[in-house]
Each structure stands twice: as structure tokens, then as C-alpha cells.
Length: 201
Image 1: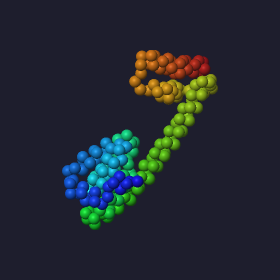
Image 2: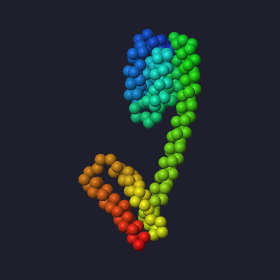
Image 3: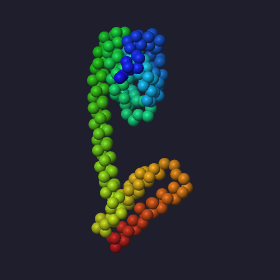
Image 4: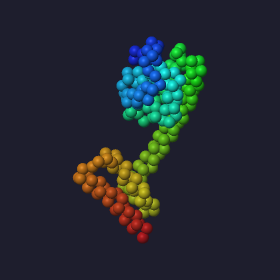
């Protein structure tokens, strides 16, 4: 739907350009950051930034580059919103031709950032899947330890920590939960440490 679908248009850009100045940009960025899932607020901030032409362009490209152009609750830069703002600047007749051209160039730059971010997140997901599979395999080995190839202390602790997290006990715990986690550690790590030592005798 985009910002236009939230009731903003070319007239909105002109009105915002009259009311706002470069001194408002940091406030606008803060509003955008705090908009979270409030689409109307995010759209308003996008138009407000676009209305500032060169200064808005520089603010968006700078925060995209340093990884801070994102809404609270999100884990990565919102490249789509950044592209929307640059697209508005490129077509806003109050912006000079040089700024409009630079907005188009910056859109290409952000497209490359988008591809790189996708590749990074894809690789991280693959790595996490492999780690999960390895630790899951070690969990099975912990249940049926092999005298030929016992798990190392580090591997047993990995299994323990993953089990604690899966049970939702990796945050603040009650005294009873703390005692249960301690017993788990004794059984999964310390006891098996003794088993591994015995298997080498």
C-alpha cells in the first residue's frame, strides 16, 4: 500500500516542506524509529524526510549505511521504506535536479545493500540450522554415550544450554527453577564427565 495509501500525496510533501526544516530531521528519524507497527506514523515520517530534499536524502543514506534506519521491534534496516523515501525525493519538484539524480543513484546503492543483507541473513540461517543439527545429534549421543567417542565438556555444555533455552529457563528463574537447572547441569554435564573419564580407563 505504501505511504500514499495512508492518505499522503504530493500536497503533503509541499505542506511538510513549508513547515519543517533541517533542524527537525533528527526528531523525524526518532519518530520513524518509534513508529514500530504504526503504519500511519511511519508513512508520515517518510514524507517528512522526503520533504527535506538534500538533507532528507543524506539523513536516510547515512542511517542506512550505519544500520540505524529501522523501526523499534525490527531487527534489520527497513530498506523498503528507505527506497520509498528516495523515490519521493526523486520525483519531488521542490528538490533540485542534482538532488533528484542523487536520490536515484542512492536507490541503486540501497538495492545493493538489500541484496547483501539478504545474503548475510540467509548464510546466518544456514549456519544456525547446521549448529542446531549438530547439537541435536550430540543430544542423542548424551542419551546413549559411546565409549569410543564420548562428548567433550564443551559439547555437553552446549546440549545443556540448548535444553535450558528450549524449556524457557534461560532468563530470570525462581529458586525452584534454579535448583532444577542445577540438577540438570549435574546430570547432563558433570555426571557424563565422570562417565567419559571412566570410559578412557
